[in-house]
Image 1 (cartoon, rainbow, N blue to C red):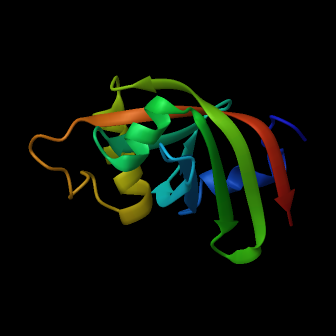
Image 2 (cartoon, helix red, strand yellow):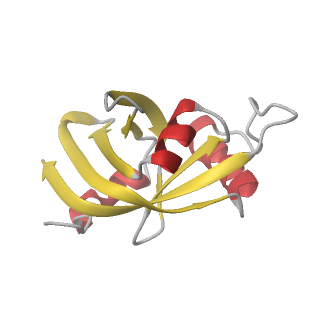
Length: 132
């Protein structure tokens, strides 16, 4: 179903599911990074730090794709093609702590650097495919 996350796959955003985020490099080649993911009901949320390659790529070219495999059944997956609809620092620090709780079981994200600026990327799904 184009643009809508099927209800039967919403559980992937509740589990410790890693997504592979594909962005576009300046030369047009793909760049893929494993990321933690969240879902706000309409956008997939990715949290990163300013200045990283995926940050630069998404600011320059908002076209992205994500692939999520169910950690309990890797043959059940969700692929989302979309675009970054919003980039904001607002709430990003709190959000990375929320993700650290989900993925690591800790209250504070332990790898934060002193000069690091956290950024949220809100990805609008445009095409969704799934299996399982």
